[in-house]
Length: 143
Image (cartoon, rainbow, N blue to C red; front, side, top):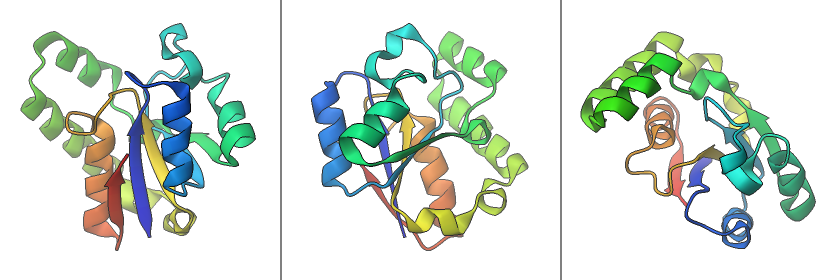
C-alpha cells in the first residue's frame, strides 16, 4: 500500500499534474479545511476534480475528517508554532480515530493526500500520512 502527499502552491499546474501521473496516483484526497478559495487557482473545489479526471484519470475526494478545525488553524496562523500545532493536530486525529474510520481497502489504489503547502515538512498532510503509516503497512512518498 502506498500513500503520497502533494501540495499545489509554488508550482505550475503542469508540474503538479505531471508529478501525480509519474507517481501513478489513482486517487486524491483533499485534506484542506477550505477548498473553495479563488487563491487556489487550478486546485479550487470546482475545478480540481475535473482536471484530475480529464488530465490524469485520477479520482477526487474531499475529506474534512482529515482537516484541522477552524480554531486549530486560526491559532497556528496567529502564532506559527509548528510544534504546538502538530501536537494538537495529532491529538485531533487520535480523537477522530482516523486509522479506524477510513476505509483501509480504498487505499489499495495509490492515494495522494492534497493540501496547499508547497512541501510536506510543515503540513498536516504529512502528519496524516505518518499516523496512517503507524497503523497500516503503508509506504509514504512526498511528491
